[in-house]
Image (cartoon, rainbow, N blue to C red; front, side):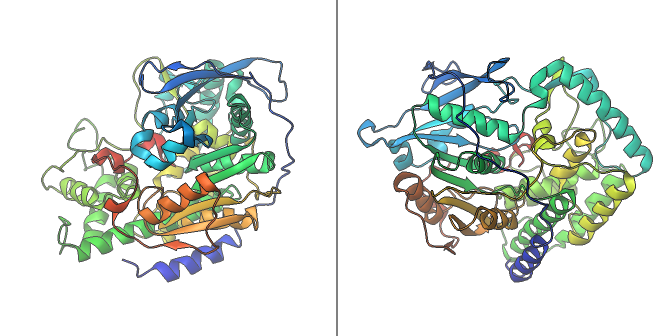
Amino acid sequence: MRRKTTLLATALLALAAVLPVPAAGAATEPEAAGQSSITWAPCEEEPSAECGKLTVPIDWSKPNGETIDLAIARRKATDPAARAGSLVINPGGPGGSGVEAVYGAPDSYTEELRKRFDIVGFDPRGVGRSHPVICSASVYNQMPHTVMSSQADYNAWDAFTKKLHQDCRARTGPLYDHVDSRNVARDMDALRAALGEEKLTYYGISYGTLIGQMYAEMYPNRIRALALDSNMDHSLGVAGFLSTEAIAIEDAFDQFVGWCEADTSCVLHGRDVRKMWSDLRAKARRGELYYPTAPDRPMTELQVIYNAALGTEGPDWRLLSEVINWLSGGPEPSWVPPLPGRGPVEGDTAELPTRILCQDYNLRVRNYAEYAFYMGVSKRLAPDVRYHPYPIDDLPICLNSTPTNPPHKLKYTGDAPILLGNSLHDPATPYMWSANAARQLGPKAVLLTYEGWGHRIYGKDKCQTDIIDQYLIALTVPPPGTRCAVGTPEESMRKQRQSPQQTWPTDKQHW
């Protein structure tokens, strides 16, 4: 299963050297404005947690202008005598709910960490309970297929996105143009102040790492600890973004195939998994493949490919093998995942968290020829999977949308050490992204490597879980180059929820 590790690492590092775009200005921001305190009360949905609201400006350049309320939740430290302060968390997305992450904190964080910190989460602006970006369902449901195959498809998307952005801006209001991660970092500094913390202690996962990276740039002297798990790389343009994602998903699929060849518990053991996978993609392209629980329309190849990403995020290789077998005519899996990918929505409105991605990254392409070139590169880098479904599903939505937080190399001038972590075989945020982010942040950044699989490293094994805990609690930084081997998950200090949904994520929180 490790047969490509050395070659992959070499390729990624070589690619990293040529992909970052020029740096943008990253001046330190002034003190964040906002209300000075939060009124807490038991959460209606989860009375064992407390909920409140934080009022912030929609446009931080106009602190006395129109405002929105951010939804906040916390679980107080279980041992008040040992309390070290507040730990702000974000689960990623874009579109992930920090409020719901707090609801699930007892299953996600160690007893030691919960004893020491109030666990605090917020729904970022434009998400969930914090004035979500919304569009008319009637417009959203006109969305063309997100994989383009001609200039006519590109023209259709060009026309549709103009209509979509106009509608969503009208529905959402002025916030539509102020949801990038720099604005969220400003909100987080206001939250820090409202919590009464002199400096921020933060743990962010996946897209939540971008919030932490922006905070490090903007408020370098207000950091106590930043633990960034499975990092975004904000230096990438569209070419680098799509290419590195393609490499990562192919590597994760290779690891799955290697497991299936070696482990008799794989239902496809002894069969040609790559050929079965290729046959499913070809059948979907012909319009002949149906998801057994959704027989009203054929599956697209994109929906088939989504399974490779979702099945390797946990990872949940056993379920992925069962799904491939099921789609190939075998028995129903032990748990049936929902049909992956975007689909029509019911009701009057649809949420569009992709708007956040469009403001943080420049994923625009000028025409179909440019798009086809990038797709061709992805297919050469990922001969089995062909492309990564997440950015390909999002890219067309970003047409006719200009980034307000353009990609740039990170710049950190603070003294507090920052801890980054990533697994070697992460299908969603490639290991190279964390390596690049650590290099850009400079000598104060330390990269912790988990020599395993999947997305998010905290809680997978005791080694990295303990290291992250000790960093957050005691500010103990591991030596540069620290690596954690794959151990026994049952020894992890984190409680493990035994549910297949825990390791087979939905596309709502896919970064």
